[in-house]
Length: 266
Length: 327
Ligand SMILES: Nc1ncnc2c1ncn2[C@@H]1O[C@H](COP(=O)(O)OP(=O)(O)OP(=O)(O)O)[C@@H](O)[C@H]1O
Ligand SMILES: [Mg+2]
View 1 (cartoon, each protein chain N blue to C red):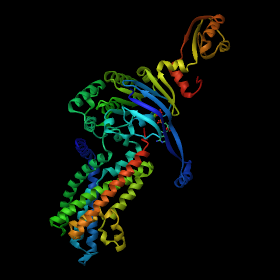
View 2: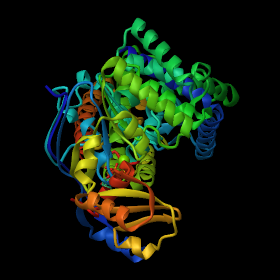
View 3: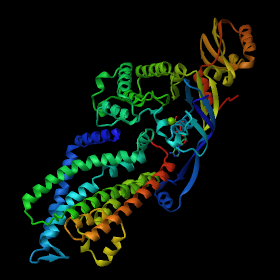
């Protein structure tokens, strides 16, 4: 355990070295929220509800995305693992008594912590700036279920995206483009751009059977009381099933990849 | 009981063949042709505790591939390998705590942080006790003279300084077995010498087992009593460095100094004239007829001085590598 604690602290230090990158990255996130905010303000001019959302609910959703997505999708592992496999740096870890996946999850956590600290500040700032009426459930059961679903979403995201980056074991040249497409899809399908129930009914029903809504849309839905507690509990159970599936699958792909790994680049 | 046992090790890489040019690229999207690159093709050897073995061969011989299999990075195509009783590619922590693989010009240190941070991280990863860590680190830092650079960002170190740091990072858990893949590559002659001294010292002081690959014959000559030569994935030689001469050198060199002008064509009748720069000539002759050739030379030429010598080990190895004159 001590080794991962140290990795966490080194990763934290490492993030600070790229301060400017970090600040620009946060700036991009704030811009995105502002943009979404004004777009929805236009949609809501002259009416009280749209797509079944009241204005405060929708604006609440948009602000929520900032925090939830920050925690779920801040993952330096996605930018690095594919490259490390392709250029052979993975060897450094395989030689040592350390788990590569735990190593990168720890680094992700460090990045998530840093990002979440900032995003809370940003939320306060945005809130002071825009003064929206937002809705947040204060029911302890909603908060607890939402939190659990959120944590499960963080883990699902980690393992799902690892399955994608492990493609580098087979096509080391094409990882970046591949990853880019997958990440964009995940962002849209998880509800990070807009709540999923603005989509046509058939798309929604299809998405139900994928892990994506569990990353962002469902956790936020619970925080803003879109679902009954019974429904939320069912979502939590299903989320855990998806978590199990993604862990199992990513470990299988990882092991198969190692068989194919040729430790190139030296 | 040898600490490293390799039996009939084979490692074939599956390589996908791409036709040159754009149309080739497009075609290879749809149908890919594969062939096996036989990087290691049936190699066997045993290495005992405390040995320092030179592992040499021309580019692409399969040295690095073998070391990668021995350290568990690659799964072999076939054959058995046992290192300290472990199968390397099981990657058991108890195994990993006892060896290190160092590759010249490759980084395990965190690029943006001082090397010291990486050492501390390795201490935790390998679970080295505090006291042992401190002692090992002090020793290594002194031996390698890098005290002043411990707190400098790794990216700001020179190549030589970085190599030393890499070495410390690789040795901080006091491995019993060391695989060194071209540890002196890219270093200046002074640093090469220091690195060699260090390797020798490390081997003797801790009785650690070391396999070293290098393209610098000085490394091998100075450090290794035993060498293993491979080429095209096959073992060519395994034995004492001195044995190479006996086994592969099928000629000797006659160096003559003449007192009077001689004709080069006449000398060619004795053997192959390697150098001719009056008054000195070097003639290569078959081993079996060396003494007759020397007698002939003395009889028929105005010889002031004559030496019969074994060829240089570099030359023999070069010949072995190029595959000509193989006995
Ligand atoms: N990942 C790989 N995929 C396909 N072929 C490979 C791969 N790695 C090495 N090879 C091939 O295997 C052979 C052995 O390579 P290896 O790196 O083991 O040689 P080496 O003896 O270390 O050579 P050098 O002295 O140049 O470092 C070479 O022909 C090389 O082209
Ligand atoms: Mg090599």
